[in-house]
Image (cartoon, rainbow, N blue to C red):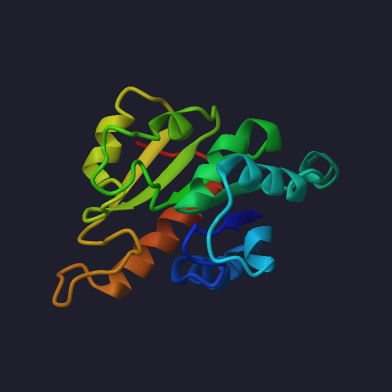
Length: 196
């Protein structure tokens, strides 16, 4: 099972979350897209990180019982802010690994305010899919930030921005991006190993 949280500026219908929810079930993975309570309440702006974590922890409170009774492996993850929440709560939720889609390493133009500690804190494997044009941290910035940390695999989505959008005429097409995204996440969930 893969639990996916959305980003601060979007919802569970984000294209990458919807793609995984559509393409992973035929591969034997149940995908649960989680909508944060602040969106359900009709708010336009995300709440502070501690409240995001609290909502995630309430949702995942029964995971230990579920996994021990069924043997089901549960992974956490999300897009942008959802990835941060999954990383910050991984130790408490007991997930087998974390999938990070467009991890927001820093705010645009503020690399000195790094969030790398959130990404490196979990002891479970992490898979990071990051665009090379992401203003919240390019794939190279993320790779440099996690250098020396174990259990993290960073996969480049060439030419992609924070929303995984590509420039027109890019050699790496939207179809290529979708296939890489699904293939990398599926392989990670199957092995639970971030690989090299």
